[in-house]
Each structure stands twice: as C-alpha cells, then as structure tokens.
Image 1 (cartoon, rainbow over the protein chains, first blue to last red):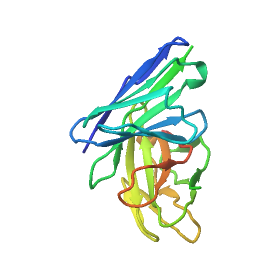
Image 2: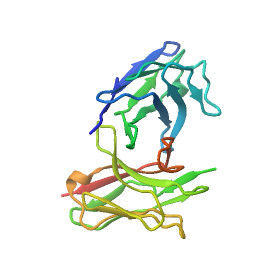
Image 3: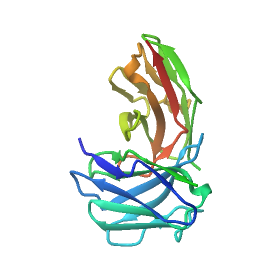
Image 4: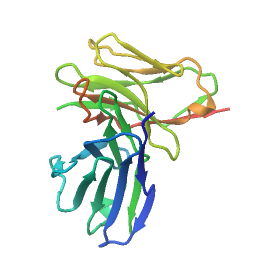
Length: 114
Length: 113
C-alpha cells in the first residue's frame, strides 16, 4: 500500500531555535498534504493544509508565521517550527491522500523544546 | 462543530478477552467514520471504515458498525491478541473524497499474555 514517510521521528531542540519536519509520499503524488498536532491527552488537531505550488491554508488559531509550511514538490511537504518554545512541544503528524483512496499518515514526530 | 469522543484509556485486557472501545460523534450531514491504529514507533494505519449508516467495517477480526441513530461507531473484537496492543483512534471526515480528519483522543490498548 501507499506509504508516507515522516522525518525525524523524535527531535529535541533548544528554545529559540527552528526545527524542520519532512513528510514524503513514497510511491504516489500528493498535491495536498495535511499537518496535525496532538497535545497530551487531547485529540489530533488539524493545523494546516499544504498545497503544492501555492500557499498553505491554516486552521483558525494556528500562527502561520510560526509554523511555516512548504510544499515544493508533489511528494514533499515540510513543516518548520520557528523560534520554538516549550509550549510548542507536541506530537506532529502529516497525512497525504491518494486520489481515489484514503489518506495515509506518517509516523509522526515527537518534538521536545527545552 | 464536528467532534469525536472516545473512551479514555489505557485499556488492559488479557489475551483472548473481548474488546470494546466506545466512540461517539457529532457531525452535520453524512460523515464517513474510521478507526485508525498506531503501533509503537509507526504511523497511523487505517484499520476499518464505514461511509454510510448501518455499514459495518471489518478487518483483522475488528468490527465497527455506523449507527446514525446513536451517532456511534464502537470498535469490537471477539478475542484480542498481544499483537493488538496499540493506540486506537476513532475519526470522521465530512464524507467520501474529503481528507480533513477529526480525531478522538486515542485509546491505548495493552493486551497481556
């Protein structure tokens, strides 16, 4: 079946630095990808929709200047958490829908900001 | 707005026990309903889905029935195995061909030998 690869799976960074998370569709093209975030004991919440060749669309309450999304090719979307702070520590996961099929999810990234 | 509520875990069962994980939803229209499973260190995998009322999704011995009258999509398995230990997420989308998911909080299942 279709596979979505997300990297890294875990990252620890210092407060004030930026972290980039990659999401790749390995055997299909995805013009749209989605980024979700999960805080402890809460649901996975949609953050933004990544659109190949155009700007991402963000859900209400998500700071677009803090969470930069780039969808430069049909198989790669990146999420950069800029000037990370401890409150950004969370589990981030991407998904990519395959046309005519369901959405496939990456392994997720556990971000810890210290 | 749309939402999904599922029972909090962790759920700990002995091997061959019966499993139920409750899931209820709030949605307008006719949502599609899903159960995803996340094994340790892996991504979310689709376990089963149902796209209309009274549909039953099934896979690997797991079943769930789309109950519009009770807005529920409870996950069941007659006899769990140690290898079923994972986190289970109930989710919905607004319908077939839409890909913005609304998830429940996830329920961790631990099966003991």
